[in-house]
Amino acid sequence: MMENKAVLLAVAIGVFSAPMGMIADGNTFPLWPEGKMPMHQDVGPETVKPTTDDIVRFTNVSVPTVTFVKADADGLTPAVLVCPGGGYSHIAWGHEGSETAQWFRKRGISAFILKYRCPGRRDAAFADAQRAISCIRANAINFNVDPARIGVIGYSAGANLAARISTGHAKRGYDPVDATDKASCRPDWAMVIYPWDLIEDIGKGASGFPKLRPCFPVDKTTPQTFIVQSQDDRCKVQNSIAYYTALTMAGVKAEMHLFGTGGHGYGMRENGNPTDCWPVLAEAWLSGVVDIED
Image 1 (tube, rainbow, N blue to C red):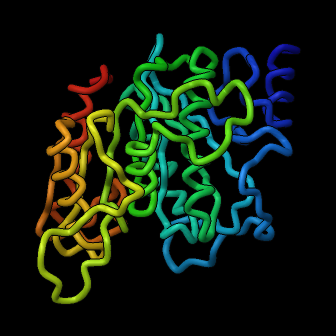
Image 2: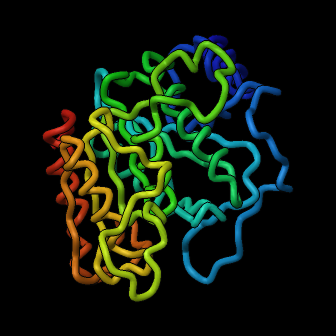
Image 3: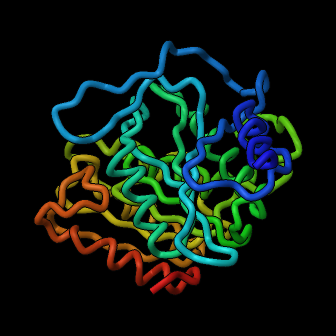
């Protein structure tokens, strides 16, 4: 009991990079040691945005965290960093965060939900995501996860972030702050779901093939990737097509599923569209990437 209290105390003061012992399900951890957060900016009190639906949306995030959701499995398990969307203005916590984490939990994969800095903090969010992968890997034994099977899933702006850490892992977006940053920030696999803003502005009526933005330098070290989007997505299906093409040209294994209808922002919820089946396709893909529970 005293040991568990010491663990929780260490977590509370932000010592994520220190040896902590086995970590309990449901704990939330700050990503950065006190006083060492790069690009720190206080954007005001963290709030939940008013909503007319059942989606919880956090904004004004100044202190990024990860929330641990332990796999329903014994032994070392795979792990996934979950990056909800929200246009970098907020964090769509429910359907693209906690619900996704529970889906992975049931399949023997421990999940870490990332609450990254926002609004309008793309580079800070990139640093948060890189730091999160390193933190999970550096503390893998404490979370009972396999450091060689750590993936990332992102939706919309979170998919933008997942693609960015997949392609930008060779160079950190911040100067290392402690020993945790010696652990690789490269995900071992990635799931990019209805990605947003991966391509240069194609403009109305523009012709030619869309180009990825320079901040997505796909090469042979980019992890194998699963992609989903629909043709009627307001965020342009060309984002997925351009990313898949770049992955293929670089010799990276990739699987892409495009649907005629489905819209945007559905997470893993069914909405009566063909996209309802994508979690089944994802589970089949995962079975070939990591060992998961049937």
